[in-house]
Image 1 (cartoon, helix red, strand yellow):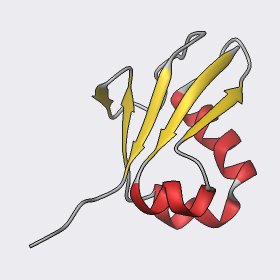
Image 2 (image 1 turned 120 degrees about the vertical axis):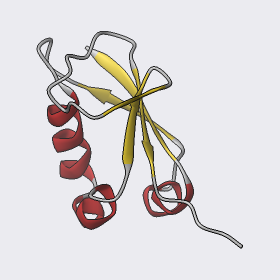
Image 3 (image 1 turned 90 degrees about the horizontal axis):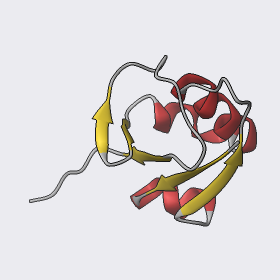
Image 4 (image 1 turned 45 degrees about the vertical axis):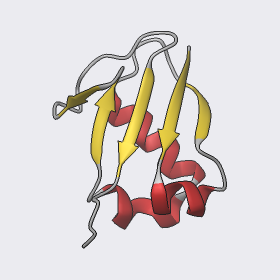
Length: 82
């Protein structure tokens, strides 16, 4: 199945794109999705440890959450400012 993975801020800069289409197995979870993404961008492992994960525009903490065809996963890095 295919899902869309969105990246923001430094993740977008480091991957060179805001949107990534990933091909996953039919039984994919958020955890396996992140594994596939890290296989493509192994240098981002540290960055991903500090990101929030959203599925279809809702924050998700359970990385065992099942994914479905056409889902949208977003990796949201911490934001700071002043």
